[in-house]
Image 1 (tube, one colour):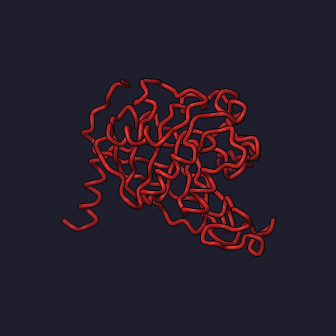
Image 2: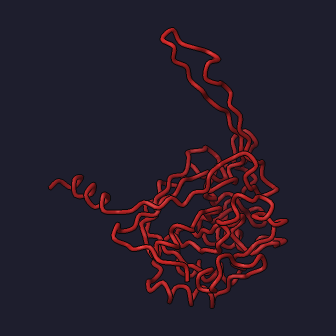
Image 3: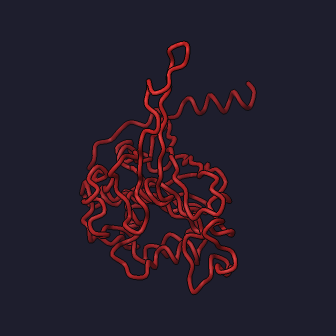
Length: 275
């Protein structure tokens, strides 16, 4: 069997779990970012080909930080400097974006993923709006997952807030929501992961005046942040580790990009009821 056929056979034995949220008019968006706007620009029948066929098309506008997306390292700075001490002032423009550490420099992602199901650990469908994920929660969740975290992994924290996606006001909750504070962020960065993600917008306990988790992960540690995931099906699957697959769009100078991430798990993995 060729190497390609072997790879296809292995992939055929996997179950693909979609980790992305849908885009729709009125969907949740962080108030500092432009919302998702959609309109058909061409309806069927407006222009009909001689054969009788016609096509429809649309136009969209959105912030790259709306919906399921990954933050580039250039998204945040501290005292004027990006990750690695790069001065931001000389490498940014309205037309060209941020010319260092931008989202188009992120390679397609094929990495080991680990789910830390904090909501299940707490015996809740959804964590309370003021729940702060601390290192002891992460320690317990990792122990419950019966796995480890390796350098370069993508670590996802489940809060249960996926369930609020169709209720924009409740999802944003006046920019309040569960997530890690700086101590939890340091727990993650100590494991030298590639990216950390969750269902909320943003990925940290909010309200927060200075967004220390974003600064610590993006600027100080060089760790990407993934927000607005849908982790419900992955949680029900019972899988704690998986192959995480995603590809950012090549937006030159971009500070983020929408992604449609997928978790690949062995097909024989049996679903589990929420505990």
